Image: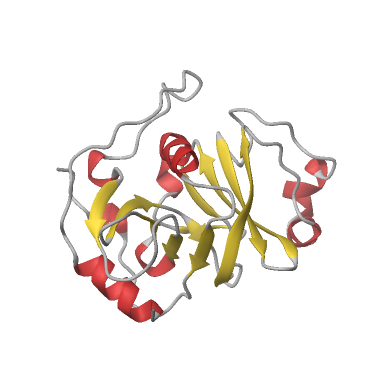
Length: 205
């Protein structure tokens, strides 16, 4: 499957199934939601296998592949500047309310921001990884230190904002986490294949 073929067909589909149901989590129930127009939807796609995750950064979209050439599309925030890393990965671990430790590169780039957390931060509502985290591993090489994770900052969705990870609002991260299997393939598509589509220009339905 060519990545361009997957992106073009997914972006052009426009076939939606209304509102998905979400697992209830009282810890995140009161968080500010993103507009209804950005809620996960089922779309038609071409290519890909059920269970795979595809992140298309130019459209701030994450696709969890389903059967019958369908996928659940979630909106995400992605890595800023040159910190976004494309490639093929697999889900090596999954954690609820994960702890977080900044990488040495993060501390070196922004010591004032990250040095204080070099021994780690316990999981919880203020943790940068949010309610759930999916850990991306390289085949045969181990942890990539890239994550797909939650956030309680909905206004960061739809922007190049992170140190390389893809983020969803916590409610959507919980839903994706529950649907994703350990060992699933993950494809982070390259930036710059298509014109950017700022999602905050979308009108609420």
